[in-house]
Image (cartoon, rainbow over all chains, first blue to last red; front, side):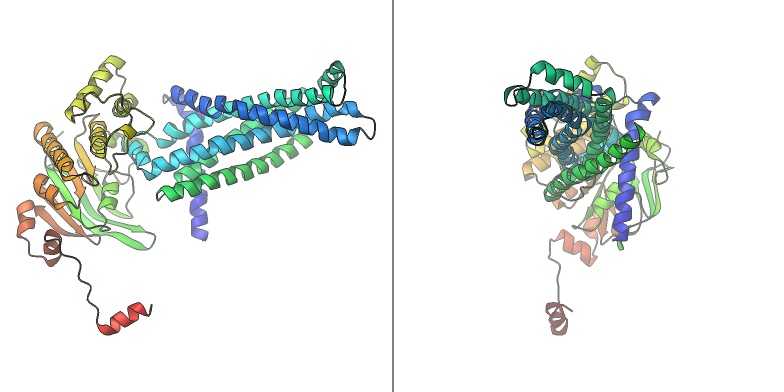
Length: 254
Length: 264
């Protein structure tokens, strides 16, 4: 038990080290990252998630506005719905919702892709061709998610706030200009910015967990399935842990 | 380049999976320019041995020399240099499913050389023609049959004109006709390109067709190393069993059998 735990930790640290090396350092030593693969990963992980992220953010914006109105109406502070929707979305909900959607869509896909390549000896084949599998498989995904999770989070911010706006001006009878003005006044640049930093970190966590679980596959197809499931569970768990960490950090230091 | 007579020299190779000893001190040499078959039953350690020789696994003990150069102590960049002289055809061909056949074959060339696209395309077509897959450039691996996948995998293994070519169970999962076609291709490569070829297999018909030199493994040890005629003439009981396809006899005394079924 202690032996397997130690092995798991050393495997994980090797994958993390190598991923960072092949993504950030080796391009400056004449081994560039595969640009076309990166773009294709960006399309798969980012562009193709736009509809689901948009719909979910829109609904969450509406839900937040309704829940906020439920309490704020009683104290006659309905206008603060705008503050609550804007701040809680940008600081917290957009990054985490996006991260959960992306780990369900892309984190699991990474684990399944790398895992089935491992099971079919394709990873071994890459090594014998002198191609580093981390550079070939993980670096494009890492860059793609580091760019696309913040981008999706920004989209989620905008759509979530418009969801809250639409509900407030229709159901809650707020004046559109008041809502707009209140949101602008409530939101600080740092609210949006800390949300994006979180999203960037979540993107890395999701990629690295997917890659780790994929490379851990030793046997056949049933293990690929098991590893795929655990990659989703583990990446959502780690995303929440990182969220806690960043939220505390920003609470005290911004 | 022909500095030594032996392409590969292995001395005292030992390896453990956990606390099970898989390879128990193997010492052998593989002659240059010939076809060597590593033969043995399932679970005798022959695939593990292959993985050590191509540098995917590091042995617990012992040395492996490739062209007279020790490879067990090399780091990854140095090992990549050595791997440039090796081509490997894996059991399931191990083609990348997201790339076309042409891109699969072009992959090692793109990675290690800076050849312009037009020349690259010509090289890829030459390799595909060599294995009899002309015109299949734009197919994906999932659209090909098992035998064609293996041929495509072979074209990729040949992409960088290796000195030494490894085959892991080339005829596994193929019908006899397709397997014989692949054997013929292996012989052609040896005769025309003077490559050193190492085939890991347990298929007797293909052993008798292609082997110049045979290394037979049993339970992690070398049972026999020598020419094909030597293997045929051998009267070692395990070798006879293998060549005559006799099942392993399990004879228990009544007491032992009782212990087995009582789970002791």
